[in-house]
Length: 132
Image (tube, rainbow, N blue to C red; front, side, top):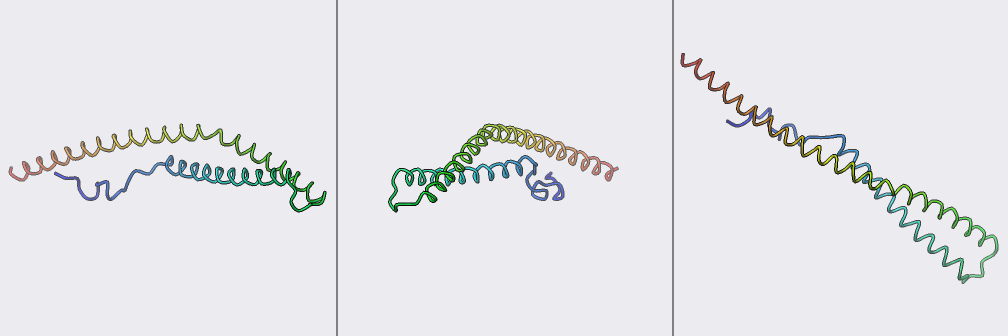
């Protein structure tokens, strides 16, 4: 016999774990950090080129502000690179979450199998009780 509709996985939906939500947030932050790092690297590159070749005969004020901005961008790039070191931790957490998900799916399948056999046994007992 099939599982009653009220116990089917379609009714409950896929198992939801806080790990999936956390992983999605971490992956989103990682992608944002990578995009920011890319932007910063291109800006630093452009500023370094502007520093070596002055096409517009810029003033000292402009040059000093560019150098200051370049220093700030380098600090930001360093901080982002340091934060990027957490990527291995994120991958480990993701792998652990995937393993836990697989285990939970296996446990769910086992529980559904037991429920199916218990329902069959109850139906047989009901049939014997009705026949008696």
